Image (cartoon, rainbow, N blue to C red; front, side, top):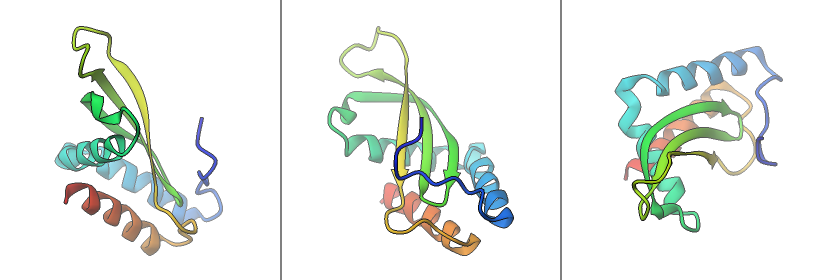
Length: 116
């Protein structure tokens, strides 16, 4: 289930294609460390989020208002416990992006902020 701020990219064919293209690009192995950093930073800002060790992260969806990631994680204080699947939600803030350039800038900004 998506959060209340989520906006599907169905209003513009170019934006729909770009959202899918960005999702596929970020799921490429070359960007795995950036995606992991984004998930880790976002989780660390949540209550109890720092308690997780991420084992695998994928971009589930990119939309005009943010990014949804799926992360497999173990709780740091129960490393022998089960893997948990976490939804990691990264809103861009402000109004949903209405064009390809705005979407690219928002995604790049989120990734760069996570890596700094």
